[in-house]
Image (cartoon, rainbow, N blue to C red; front, side):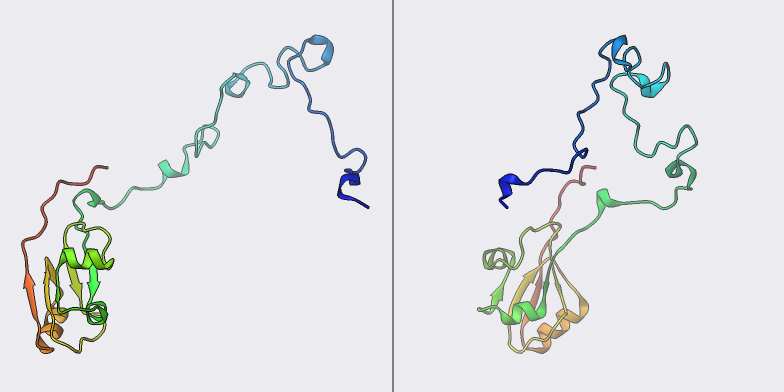
Length: 156
């Protein structure tokens, strides 16, 4: 038995029914679509969520809440443990981007307190969590706050 000899079982493959090929074919005139209505028309596509004219679910449910995504502040985040693992003793936005720790500076760099720090380092960032600042200063380092990045609201 070869792969080239394999055939589908008898009656499995059927020819596609050719619609709208004239009255003699038995599928002419309306081509099985019925006489009138939206679905009989060429180019018809049902809109997403259509429920046959009934009010769709997404319109029946109450709308609640508010999204302030346009003015949302998004920080590039670095943890204290990550800074402890990196070589060097001074860190700022440029050096962290060069090291590949942060990819994109959004509204600024924020240092968080996840992990421990065992050496004195100098960190320059736009924002520090209270615990992160405390951990850096407790280890003998300094946390320098710089002016936040100003940018336009995000397009929606």
